[in-house]
Image (cartoon, rainbow, N blue to C red; front, side, top):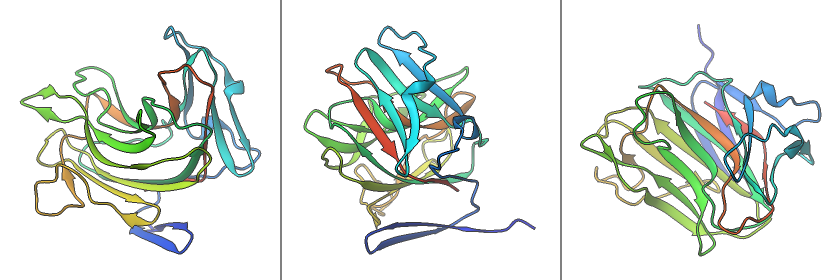
Length: 235
């Protein structure tokens, strides 16, 4: 019999309760090994692998991902959980960043393998106007479109944010689902079509498999950037 646990995300007086099987809990303790979560992905601006484990550390209750000037990314690729199509997944974590500048992602639901259409079905990133945004890359008639902005909010450096994202995985745009909570509150999403403003339908599964990645990927000004991520819950 599978034990059903509960993911509880708390910030101030806000509480989210999502009942699901707890697949993984990654707590930023001093003896944490990144291999327990997956693979550290560090890359120079020229897209060559940096193989630089020193860009990741754990301190003061955070996983710290450092993208220095001259680098393109510092992310953890969560391979420790095996994700599959036609399942519901929930990801919940807190984070803060040292800067708020346009980038590619502070979190992404990233495609891998052959027959790739979307490359990145879902991302959370910063925009040029200092907003934190949730983006999805829709597919129409088998062709990936430009990403659409589902949600955004003003953001500031060193502010602590809590997010929870729910994804139902499907290659069928009519069956894939995204739901989103921010700082303990469910968020209305753009481009919803079912009459439920909190539920967005589109393709959320791509290629051979899709994995989440936390950290920092890309920026327009080649700045030094940190993404400090608190305890990660996967359900």
